[in-house]
Length: 371
Image (cartoon, rainbow, N blue to C red; front, side, top):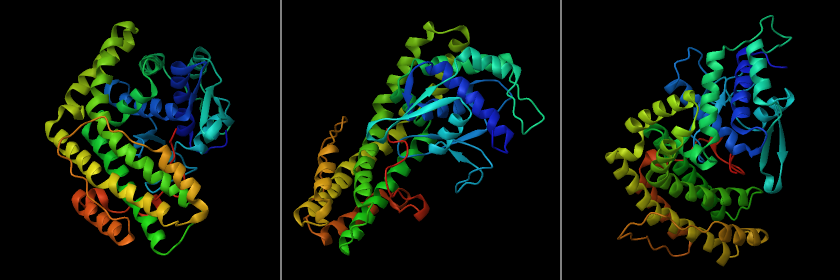
């Protein structure tokens, strides 16, 4: 199988089984794959009573929590981890677990190749690997729990899975909101710095599109907390009676957990994110609009203007939540005024949310997991 870490291989096959139970035989977007597995990693630790612990973690991302699997073959800033990106998809594909399809607009679809019952039998008998003398087996009770979780995930659409993975507790929710906000400030600051020296790097449009998409994600995250999470809880209550005994038990445990931890039930946190939402409408959206109009009106990066105008058109935003007395800052469409507005915005949001991300964490193109 080509990988030294036996636990990595074992986890890979268990994840494939959960994906097969939740999706087979349909094709689905990569984004759904990451959300199913990110929920599995959290739910397994929180609501099952199995001694097995997933050989994986999860991490905040602009598009919600994403999963990471440990491996000796790859690492990131946190050490021996393997992020669910193209490499992970290739590993599963090379082991015959799924196939990937690149469709229009560079989006990736996945299709599980092995039916769930066939994968279950393989996991009960043991996953053979010529590199190791041991055969990796999973117990029947463990696979029953895995199937129970997959049955729940099968009933939730991708957005509901994303909300459940990202906003099941205040820590997850706040971590993702902080990261997406910091990324917006980082992207906006880079664009302004390029404009100030009349520089148009090859990835100018990618970073501009990221900035626009990030502003949408800031708004969307707060709407997910206040509107989406209560809806997901109601959906879980509705489907509970339609599930198997194992899945019903897991759903009840999940609901009990959410009733104690869901961030929309925390009045202090809700006050905080309402303030964040208002400041986004007051500062971030006007600054972004001013930057785009400056680029267009001043004919900055002339060769890129058609793309800039398309980005401006593609990312129209209509927030769902309504707040009274929002006084948007007024910005003259010149560089000095925009730079001052960005400085004021950083002060309004505070350093925790507005300081630039380290160089290694900056986006230079399409943000991973955007589907």
